[in-house]
Length: 335
Image 1 (cartoon, rainbow, N blue to C red):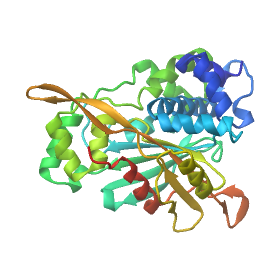
Image 2 (image 1 turned 30 degrees about the vertical axis):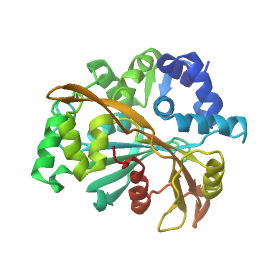
Image 3 (image 1 turned 135 degrees about the horizontal axis):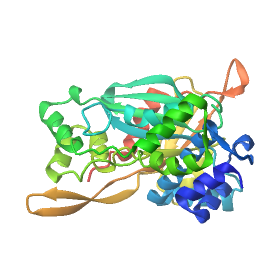
Image 4 (image 1 turned 60 degrees about the horizontal axis):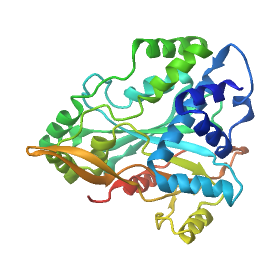
């Protein structure tokens, strides 16, 4: 069994692992059998696939789309990128902002490819691309929200929400990251033990938000309100398709709720659209006890990328601040 299959099975179970391999297009070099050490590229791909599985479990329309692509269109999903939201603010036991996640990505071979200011959202986005397989291992689009650009009351609310954050990365998992950063590989047993702990960093790590704080945050930033309930989980995952306009039309014909508009980058080479975010129920505290609210969760996105003008063998792997701002709107539904 290839190391990547062993790793993913250890995290999500054999049945779910089999489904991932049947649903996703994976570079053959990442699925080769080997013994002993596991490369950083295989570790990165395994992490991406585990997080992709988690996203589909939270987003029923995304799971239905993936299964339909296999069954009806006979094509595998090309995982283009996953998106995450962070807050550049004191966060309990966690590192501030994107470092809570980049500390996992950097040792696995991801490097920052570009920065995207998102002034309308009072956020900054950064793309992290794998150095060994840039076109074949999904990128991470990591955004940071800047509370200092909001009102003092908002900042106080952010402080209350994030103060309870706990660090899920134990000493063994951190040591494994240091080793792979230094050597580029890990022994299989160490990798099997570390991968679930790395994946656990991509989740919510603070206590349930108070209803009053949620409403305070929502009034100024739907993005921060989303972070208050969902934390650092995948905000969305993305399938790279040949023609996003045609794909979106097909999804409307299937009755799936998808964005009316396709976002087009300033270069014209990157086009994106997305399904409406899943609704999830989250517990919030009030002076009279806990209540359950229905709020926007994660979603699934479609993207088309053209090749670069200077090299027809290379895709334009860039993002676009305008596109990103439009896609962020999928989780701005009022509660």
